[in-house]
Amino acid sequence: MKKELTEAIKVAGKIVDNWLPMKIRYDHTPGAVVCIAVNGVPKYVSAFGLSDIGKDIEMKTDAQFRVASMSKMFTAVSIMQLQEKGKLRLDDKVSDYLSWFKGKTKETNLSNITIRQLLSHNAGLFRDGDAQQWVNDKFPTKLEGTVSSKAIVFDNATTMKYSNHGYSILGAVIEKVSGDSYDKYVTENITKPLGLKNTLPDLPDKIPAKLTRGYERWTPDVIDRQKEPNIKTNTYAPATGFISNVQDLALFLSSLHPDSKKSVLNRESRKAMRQVQSIVSKDEMYGLGLCIETVTGQQTYGHSGGFAGYVTNAISHIEDNVQVIVLTNTQSNTAGAVSDNLMRLIYDLKDSKDIKSIPNEPYSGMYRNRWGDMVIVSTGDDLVGFGASASNPVQAWSKYKKVKQHSFKNQDKIGFGTPGEVITFKKVKDGKAQTISSDGADMERVY
Image (cartoon, rainbow, N blue to C red; front, side, top):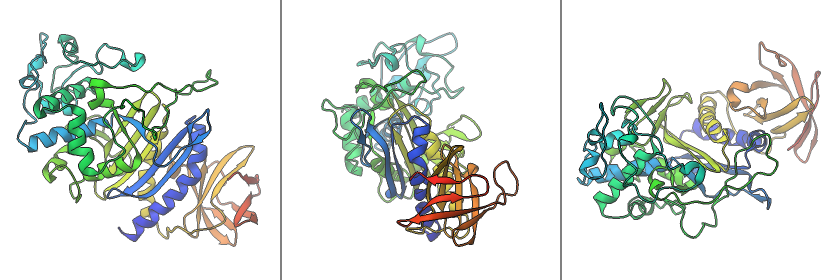
């Protein structure tokens, strides 16, 4: 790994350490785990906040989460494996394997839908059917009878329409072709070979000890946040059932890179998964079980997930095989905003001059006065500073250049803040400055 990338990750980690403790509180997110990895090997892992609010239990770095739609990546890998083995082809009709997959309207016949169309969300199927599982927590135990003409929303192969039900159907195809249950197939062919010891296709009968509890989303009239129930997803496991942690997800995402030395797919299959099948917007596309994005300023592949009590996101740099994973234990915007902007941050730092991580410097931390909370982080000889609630530190920060010991000048040339002004760090105690002094308003260290 190049020195510039190594230093960028170290500084990015320091920014996360000083940003996330307060950021999650602004977002009303109980807890989060963040990982930056290279080639699947964690270079930075940290946990923030609480895994259990009532018992005041701190989040741990190896905590497991419901990772929801990340499950689709595992399902897509299973389909690609079965194609490699000659047991199916992506352009086969789904009805060739599932006799009950039938229904038609005046324009569309389900018998025309292919495996590829399900993988890429081009089948035109309804998103979740009519079982109301996302509000009543009762996921279907059988798929037969859930598909009919009512499942058809759009003509197949005409538009991208995200469908959890479609991925549940893919799980049934995997079972039919392999002769194994979905759980057994994924375990024997993906999680065990890759050494993903903390990854499960669905909630087991015995609740895993490391599974953090998910909490209801924050709303203004809620005083005590309630835990969401632990539930099985049954036939929906291929779409949303998985449980995992940041370390396993980093390894799994890395294994999908074409140049990865450890994978359960051949190189051609890995490349095929990243080929664009659907265009959502100019920055967002979908391949085969993978979201492909340029919204971070860098090209990435991966997937997000949302489950009752959890929102997660995991992305991997298409060129450098750098993974950023953020897992949270409530429905909030923290995971998506932090993961995308952390990837952007790493590469902005990498491209900057004189970026280096200095241990035990006195400035980095979070400072407060009556007007707000400010994060300060050393990027070498100089500093950056931004509001603690910022979703995108790069867009929000000001750069401060050292002018003399403990004094730094704001490099902004224009704006409503303090362009051109000098701040001075004072009251250095136990190796940490306790006060930022300026002409406008002093700030005191919080942590």
